[in-house]
Length: 206
Image 1 (cartoon, one colour):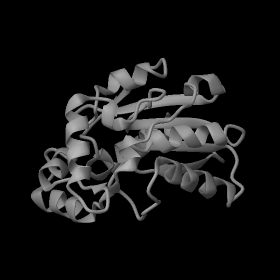
Image 2 (tube, helix red, strand yellow; image 1 turned 120 degrees about the vertical axis):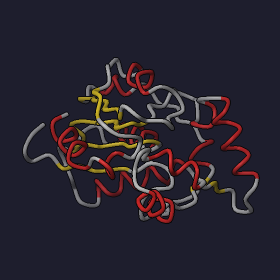
Image 3 (cartoon, rainbow, N blue to C red; image 1 turned 90 degrees about the vertical axis):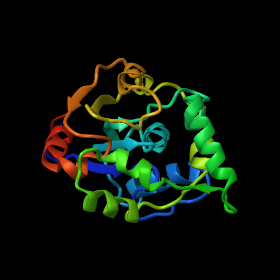
């Protein structure tokens, strides 16, 4: 990691000032444009949660501009497998949620939002829930047909919150797809809200 590295932070589902579009490819294009439009180089892509999907795809398109990819409590895609098919329980929840909406989106419930920051005050959980937005269902049902990121020769790191309760698989399994052992951090899935200094320090030094 160099002092001049530019960090591009890519949020997970329901998070952020978007919407990006209806397909996973739209989300990927948003990340790619953010780098190309600013003519960035030596970029560190940081993926949180579902952000592992567009970051993986974007890294393949931006390999000459990306120096490192950091997955923080994030999904590491398996070739040809969408998030909705990573786990049977996820498949039911996601596909049922999409089917229940007229626009093909799916939203995080208040109960699910509370699992993102376990132990946080009720006011913090309420604020997070109010900020979350519905996510296009295709973000979850589209798959990537790309080689493993390890084939790109880019530096990789995997950070994992020790009390993460919402990943589709244990974080160690996702890290293993990169040939890595996760670096453990305090807090739950959204620990950047409950332990911001620890998460920022870990990202800067990954």
